[in-house]
Figure 1: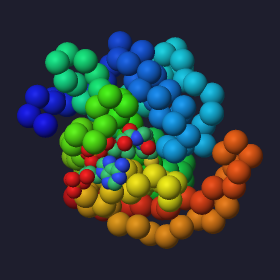
Figure 2: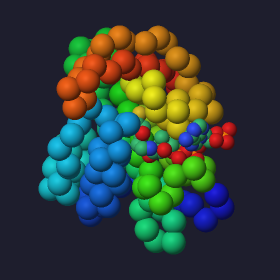
Figure 3: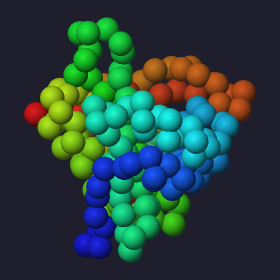
Figure 4: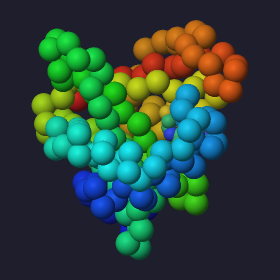
Length: 165
Ligand SMILES: CC(C)(COP(=O)(O)OP(=O)(O)OC[C@H]1O[C@@H](n2cnc3c(N)ncnc32)[C@H](O)[C@@H]1OP(=O)(O)O)[C@@H](O)C(=O)NCCC(=O)NCCS
């Protein structure tokens, strides 16, 4: 996608990030979360993460159409270089290569900050996310069985990782 650019998010991007995140929450295929995120919550999260855990945006024609972000995997010092990420593309922009560009951008940004690994969990039913992560160089580590309940139903999670640097 030639007209897509990526950049780091600022707190001013919180409303766009929340809007895209809430589409993913509504779709019930991306996350165990069921409550919508407010822009205020997203802004607070961006401020707390600071430059150590940046959010990468995909921007097309001046509009934010995707984001990828990460946070600490665990608080123990041994895991300081491991980040756990999420990636969300606006419904209207999916299936056009946007996810691949922002996820690659996230991996570059975190490699530059000295992280050695990025990990995530994906519902087995989320074919688009599994394909995206495979294309971006992630490997499937295994499957957590009955990892949590979404709308009362047990769900498995596929664990993926990519070594950085
Ligand atoms: C998952 C998601 C981020 C993928 O982003 P995207 O921009 O649609 O993906 P891309 O267009 O970059 O596609 C990446 C690869 O996945 C493949 N792919 C995309 N959608 C697919 C689908 N529905 N089924 C199978 N493969 C698919 C593409 O063919 C592409 O592979 P290729 O380069 O070999 O052609 C996007 O669908 C999304 O935001 N979904 C809702 C939120 C979500 O599930 N986030 C992930 C939580 S773990």
